[in-house]
Amino acid sequence: MIRVAALDPGKTGGFSIIKNHEENECYGFAKMTQKDISLLIKSKMSEFDICYLEQVHSMPGQGVKSMFNFGASFGQLKGILQTLCIKYELITPSIWQKTIGIPKSSDKKRALKEKAQQLFPLNDTVHGIGVTKNEQEGAIDAILIAEYGFRIENKVCIKCKENR
Image 1 (tube, rainbow, N blue to C red):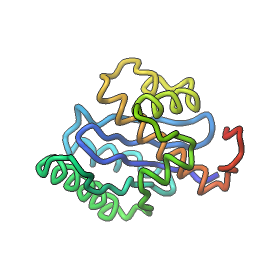
Image 2 (image 1 turned 30 degrees about the vertical axis):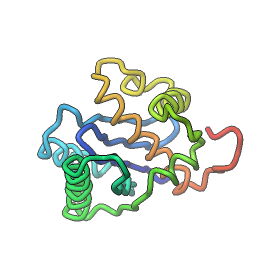
Image 3 (image 1 turned 60 degrees about the vertical axis):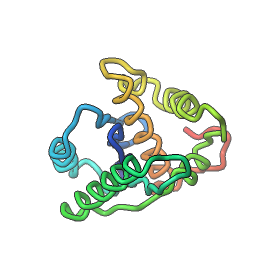
Image 4 (image 1 turned 45 degrees about the vertical axis):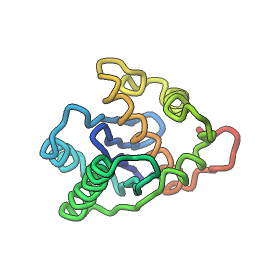
């Protein structure tokens, strides 16, 4: 079984690893420095085979400064992966969200949270236990990106009604 990690860029992004259906972990970046994030990824790199990094882009209505910071976060994460010689794939939000069944809704955060809680009922971070709301949101996106990567890498039926 191929173990998959995922990174969600941004100030409130996150990192996650799915080793198999029962073993998973996730972390939100809200309280971490860039050094903390680098050390976390380095300490966990022996626990996964590939990392999926969300490929971000600017969107209408977002401020120049926030988009610059968002892009900088993406570049820093990509740089960490390259420096540590970690195999990675880039994936756009629209692809991974569609593939794991996130509806195009006005309340995307709620839909993501519900999907993560459905897929990972025993993960405390996904359920907001012992973490802040920002840490939870970053971890949720990361674990769902990892879920997408896990399905792709392990050739899990992604069109089936019962995905896991």
